[in-house]
Image 1 (tube, rainbow, N blue to C red):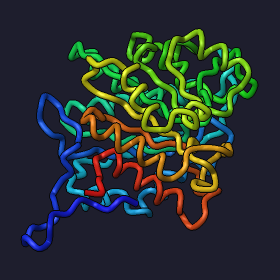
Image 2 (cartoon, one colour; image 1 turned 30 degrees about the vertical axis):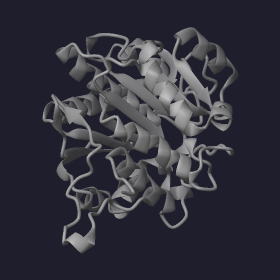
Image 3 (spheres, rainbow, N blue to C red; image 1 turned 45 degrees about the vertical axis):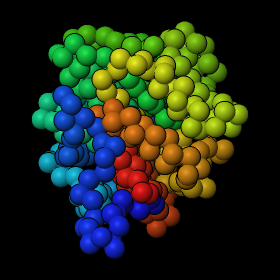
Image 4 (cartoon, one colour; image 1 turned 90 degrees about the horizontal axis):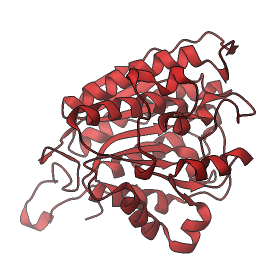
Length: 331
């Protein structure tokens, strides 16, 4: 974990109240966050993922954020139905009506947090929650007529459609939904689609794709960076290229971070581990570089599964990653 910035103790200075490389809204530094807990498990078959928000609380997420110098303005618990759901007659995808309702609640909470001048941090739960968080971010910028970029960190493409998916699990579809492809009950949330432009969307760390996803990634026009690209170019160069792909006129970035982008030797507490992922230092480097742009305005941390974790180590890592997003520095 990176150490908080401190001033020279020989000069009698106290610990810096807040890192300098934090997000801005309307030219002003943002000094508070809203924590949105979404114990969503309906997007996949791994029910342990619903315990992710609780594990983050045990790992002292609010306390760690406040120790960094931010105020936790609000903590929001999104209700999630725990009844078993399956396919309905309207779609090959599972649990669409239930996920749609959760997504509306998440979207409202995210947009409200941004409008209040805070950084919404949406904590899962499976990655289908990003359907709601991205809808909320999109609606916020749409009303301001501003452009924004999406950074999607993931071992997987999450760009399946109900027709291409072999499982019907929506947590493999949220990026496609946000780009306007999929079940219309999800793509058309809030009355419009797509929620994000493909030429402002980057997918980083992919290494485990379903065969149809390769073609879908090409068709959408998003910018992908595979784990091989990271090995070849280095994470710093990939981050720079990704920022360029999002456009120099973007006024904000949404970071949707699936913890399984990290190698399972470092982050064992996930539902769908895939070997060969980012290491500890690379993960922090990417988020620190994004924080230095002062453009991060909203964050997802998803797919933490405490049932597969070891002594809550992955939850603690997730807290550290959020602190890096918020601008924690070595010096």
